[in-house]
Image (tube, rainbow, N blue to C red):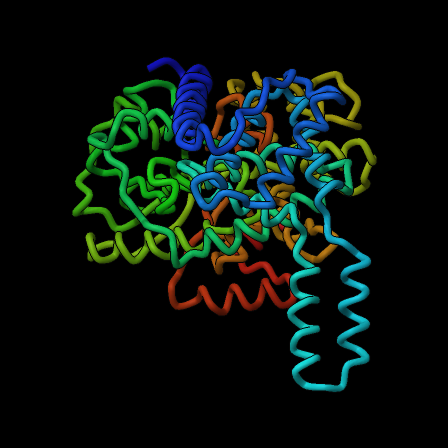
Length: 475
């Protein structure tokens, strides 16, 4: 296997070909009942746009029964898959604007409900109002659900929408409609927890490698190491997307808190005895489907995996993460740019000045960590350790969003699920990404079952961050 970045286009292209072929078969099943549409240009020019509008109307009219309806939806889906980025944007804009709710019908139904005193009349008005409030575009999107891989198609469609809707209110409304459908379809009760092993289908292993978002999989040997006997990997699947992981977590079964990701992923390290482990380290949680962004599964995944591991390994006493701190470097750079006073203590400035001989005291920390080589210089690393750990603790404990929640996205996720900040780990991730995002620092979040509910309530209610004394003491 090549590196995961090279694997991504391969399986995505294969999936796309399979989807087009499956939908061609659905479309062909209704030949003679519906007329095949002509080809459209990939950028969907105006003359083709009107033909697409007519196809959308035909889908909504649902003439000819279920087989014809599925065939029309399949034709429309295949058309979308053949468009380029510009064409897809025009397609989605047409769907958003041309098939929105009829506001006159909504107003009329609301007025009927307001003025009709008869109970039967009011019930009829309520039904009319509900129908008027459902945009035709929602009914059209729902038709794809009945097609082979139709749910996956809608998930990927929302991924396109999320990207395009950032600066477009009209598309943002369509994206919200589709998100509402997906939230209902991906209720946690429908999801299946499965363990992924080295014996899992190669296609699934390829996807696992490509979807890994925290620590890039470097090849087959790296992936095999992550699935060895002292490791576990679990994923949620949906019955309508049985070969597509929605979210997955990678776990190492070790003794004590792990504090270095390079050591944890070292392929040359001896395989541990999982039966002797007392700690489960969740070192990577990756959302595999961009189209399901904002639909939370992670908290449920962790709880289910904790239950499963506890049953399999009764000796496990601690459940914790070894997590990145992706926003720390950016936050620190903002403090540098603002010239924030008091960032360093007098003793810290004196120590840094002794390392950077001949330089002015102002901006010393920024200078010393400007490149990637500082981690390989023991004297520099020792000098910046104290201030960086203290500032990192301040970032995790005090930096907040406008809603009072933790600024760091990973911290927010774990704190929301009832974890506490247990320990900061120095030089824990010296890979390029770790240096760029968090200056090689990683954090352990611990999940203590007796405290999870209280920690969650404290954070959800008042934004209170629960942390061990070893972390709060740093600031």
